[in-house]
Structure formats: C-alpha cells, structure tokens
Length: 119
Image 1: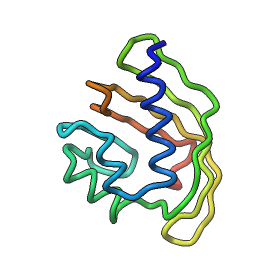
Image 2 (image 1 turned 135 degrees about the vertical axis):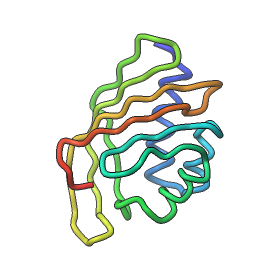
Image 3 (image 1 turned 180 degrees about the horizontal axis):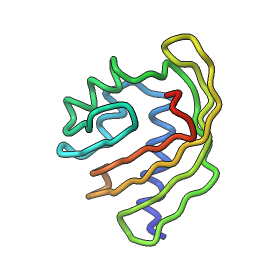
Image 4 (image 1 turned 60 degrees about the vertical axis):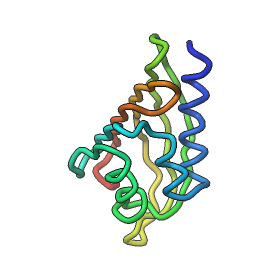
C-alpha cells in the first residue's frame, strides 16, 4: 500500500468535508476527470470548480471511511458512509464507493457510486 496514495485519499475526504471548492479542486490534477451518477463527466479543474461550487447536491456533511484498498501505488478504492444535508433540505445517510487514480500526488481520475440515487 502506498502511504502517499492512502494519505492523499484521506486528505480528499477531510478537505471535501471541511474546506471550500477551491481547496477541493486543488487536490485534482489540471486534466482530472470525475465521473458521478447523474452528472456528465467533469473534465478539468474549471468543470470541477463549477461542480463543487454550485452543482453539487450536497450542502454539508461528513464522510466516514469504512474500507480503503489499494494494490497499485497510484490507485485506491474507498468504501464508506456519507451523512449530511442536501440542497433540497433532505438529510441522508448512505453508503458510497470511490475509485481514485493519482498522479504526482494529485487526483487524476475519480469515480463515485452510491447505494441509492439520492445524491
């Protein structure tokens, strides 16, 4: 397990739970691609900034990692639970899975799946 890759994945969740859009986007490679159910693929930092700044359905919340697996130095799979509030006022507690590929310590690709279509 690459300690840097694991630390980078953990840093993502800490940042997304506690910081603003600019800080989150700074964790991504300039050519990053993010795929998430219900959204067109987001490619590049401008698209990511728009997503995290205005389009993301989540207002606030926290991620709890329950499993983190890696068998390559630059890839990590994360399973966990998200609890928080959505833009429409609903509160949710749901499972998620994220798959990351890192390049030079930055997120190059990220794909997210949820146990429900709520987010």
